[in-house]
Amino acid sequence: MSLKEYERKRRFDATPEPRPGIAHPKPGAALSYVIQKHQATALHYDFRLQWNGVLLSWAVPKGPSLDPAVKRLAMPVEDHPMEYGGFEGVIPAGQYGAGTVMVWDKGTWTPDEPDVDSALRKGDLKFTLHGEKLKGSWVLVRTRGFQKSRSRPSWLLIKHRDAYASTEDVTADEPRSVSSHRLLEDIARDGGGNVEKARKGDPVTQTLRPRPKAARIAKRARPKA
Ligand code: MN
Image (cartoon, rainbow, N blue to C red; front, side, top):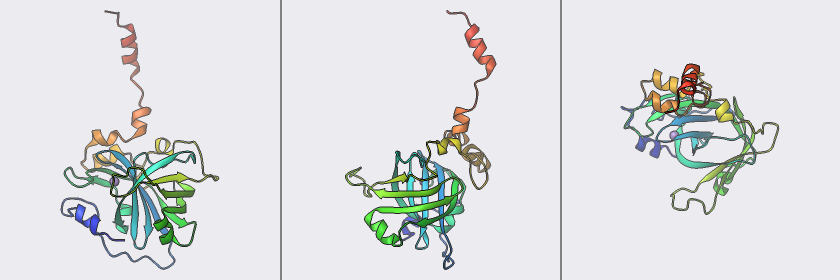
């Protein structure tokens, strides 16, 4: 576990993202879990689990699914400092990861097996989430022979069958920040970011905004040319 790659990729005089501090987890304290929704070049959900003083991180392009039949691609990315878990805001244009970041879910996690390091080496980590949106048993499993060209093998994030499994589309139905209740659009506006681009990651504004009635009627009433 190292934060060298995290530091190398960022200019802390140009981004509001936190500089790594020294993590002092309380002995016996619960392990943090956070998902940050990140509208960067492409929308993705950064899935992070506290382990050995850092946040182990995977980028999940489609976000988590509560349906055990659905496997979501999870690309491993560099470890992040513990402080990052509270970050919500705008990464300025031109900086690494430029775009809007939302704390989409947070809470704690518990490993389902005692030896987490061994589970990570094996590429099969079973765990329980105690988040505000995501709960119950999940697995992160490393794949073989998939996207071989990449330097890091892909993993899959899958919900286990339990009382919290569901076919509900949690990313569409619960698009707001658990920290501030804002949408990406609001976070971008408040942080001086790209509001138009951020809005593309907000399902509510895409799917629930009704077309103005007048425009609909006018179009129908227009005589055929
Ligand atoms: Mn990201």
